Image 1 (cartoon, rainbow, N blue to C red):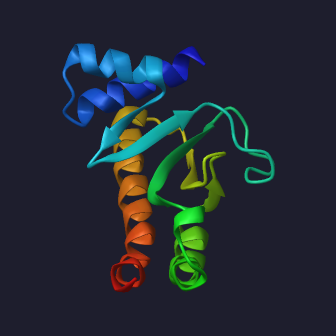
Image 2 (image 1 turned 180 degrees about the vertical axis):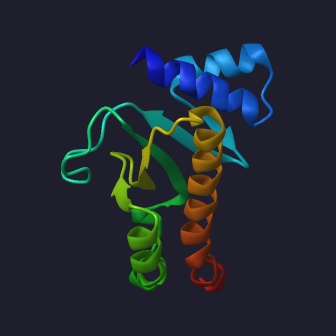
Length: 142
């Protein structure tokens, strides 16, 4: 857990946060990037990880939409884009108790972990935004 906090703080610094804000991000478990909450957890999600061990983190980002606010057409638009993203980026889509859709990615802890974790956090945010944006034309027509 401590290693995850240290990596999160260093990644937050690499993403441009000042030291006090980066320290707060590590305490909170993540950062807000481009308006998207991105969190880092030290253990794989059950069912997602298989045999992943201590060398794996889960980076999660909200999609910016709630299931209850989307009609079937908007949900289908999101899930039409999901298979490629999920397969290529070792990801899964989940749902918070409040209905917020979340993209979860398993990322390995690498030797140059700080830079790669910062990149993984940014990529996860961008992928979540891409999936969330898939429903935007549908929501805009409503």
